[in-house]
Amino acid sequence: MILVTKWFGVFLCDESRVIEERLMPKDPGIIAEKLAAMQRGALLPEEKDLAENKKKLRVSERRQSELGKPVLFDSSFINAEAYGFTGELMHDVMLRLGKLRTSEPIPRDKNLVQAIRHLDDLVVSCNLMNERLHEWYGLHFPELGDHAKDRRYCELISEYGNRDGIIKELGIDVESIGSETDKEDMERIMHLASTLCRIYDDREATENYINNIANVTAPNMCALLGAPLAARLISSAGGLDRLATLPSSTLQLLGAEKAMFRHLRSGKKGPKHGMIFQHPDIHRAPYWQRGNISRALAGKALIAAKADNYKGEFIGDILLEGFNKRLAEIKKKYPEPPKRKKENNNADHRNRGKRKR
Image (cartoon, rainbow, N blue to C red):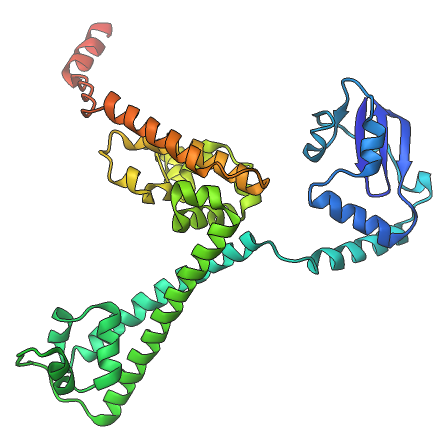
């Protein structure tokens, strides 16, 4: 027997006929609430009722997997009109369902996805404006880049503008080769520097915001990977709920999609890691150990993601201990780089071809 759920009811089927059903009440508001619960992954009381005491039950959706084994099933023979449910009622139900879902509170991991993308935009803007500021102010005081970097560089320009004030503030003895700048031009440069300082502030605040959300929504992943990397993996997957359903091999390669497609298209060597490479134990490891370490870390990260998504107990410390143990085993097992395979002698191949001819 196969359990099938439609928008108008729940049905217990045997191949091509309905054995038993539990119809929805013909109230669009109630139906919309039940459909919203289904979209969130919940089981309906009607489904549990029909599945009770049924042995070897199969189901038509993965959402119902705790009731039976999911299978593909063509349920097109179950018609809404046959049970008195009209197209107008379905239209009303779908409108109510849309309003109901859009008004639901947004999960914090979805905010995390947007925050990561906002941070990436800030980094790009910061780099572009920093380059423009160095080029522009470099006409007046090119030597400043040797004495101040990043945020400090912007602060000095926005506060003092003219190089004489900056030289006095830094207490340096520099004879600049830059040209003099008009007051109006310097005001524009100082305004650019002030804007860049605010972007630096926004970037720092966004990073703190991301770390706070990541530690609340994914404590196990943060304990294993650190908040920045955990947040980026969640963002790349599109949310914690989707990340928890991925195989560990996919999690391992998140962020390396272009390299993977290039491998599939041209046959070049495939990637061994994606953004998980940012983890210090991977990017500090010798190149021949990175694949094994990435695989081990991805497996632990997937367990952490499942624990976080389904609100399980905190096991981050256990996962980190297990990963460190596996890391030590990899380093002990592969202390030296693998020996390269001897290249085939082209001359031998040509000789064999001649002998065959």
